[in-house]
Length: 345
Image 1: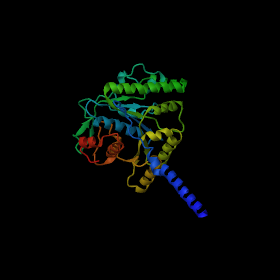
Image 2: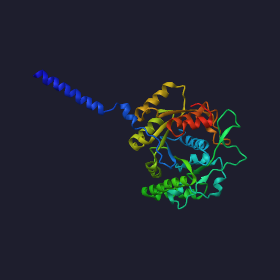
Image 3: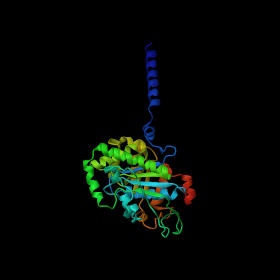
Image 4: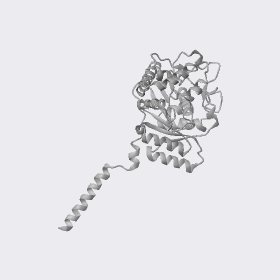
């Protein structure tokens, strides 16, 4: 009798453990469930936010390259809108508007600072006009006379070249968090409305870096991340940048984990296999498999937004890495890219 009770107890324990094991998935599978897929409602543009844990890691440079790349690879009549949320540094603004510097002389549009400090009853985003006598294109082959032209590319600069900019920036000190949040929600809705009117396929938000010395303005700007469905995280090739970004996202903005499409490790030394794999394992343990993509260092990376805008040899370099990463993430259609660029991914 005692033996039967023992056997019954063992079998019950085994059954209970099996039930618990069946309900509890391995850590890798649990992590995998946090991976995001592209969130895009029917008829809506694909909205992407770019985030980094520190300045100087190439986030804005990648955002600029992404805007130009998506514009070049979009179909005819499809536009791209780039919005600069970094109102103090405005790197994306400086890069994109350096292509057509005369655009700010007209001063007929609005900027991010307008939305934050005053709201914007009407919105007129800048359209980058590429003069026909100049060659602004994405170079997709070894020959410089071959390329895919940049088409309808719009930008909302973080600031404008006017004396009123400093006054508007100082006005931020008098705004409440709620006022900033409401203004940015208006910006977000205006961008979506503009996208529908102009057949904009992609909207890109380039945020300032997460920093421990964030002032109120940055806290307000980051309130907008609640409305954005997809994020690309950009880090430079060092543990401080990677760990800093993950630390902020996991503790303070943990809900972004489910919206993260991928990590782009910029300026990576791919020959350093040990460090590459260590960084990959570190991130993938938290965010799941296939989320890490390395963008190798390339001197052409730093000059591609000056005329002519050059992608470089598609078989090598940072731009190929970017195209490949976006195809894997789902931002770009793999078959469409291969067909348009005639390259192997």
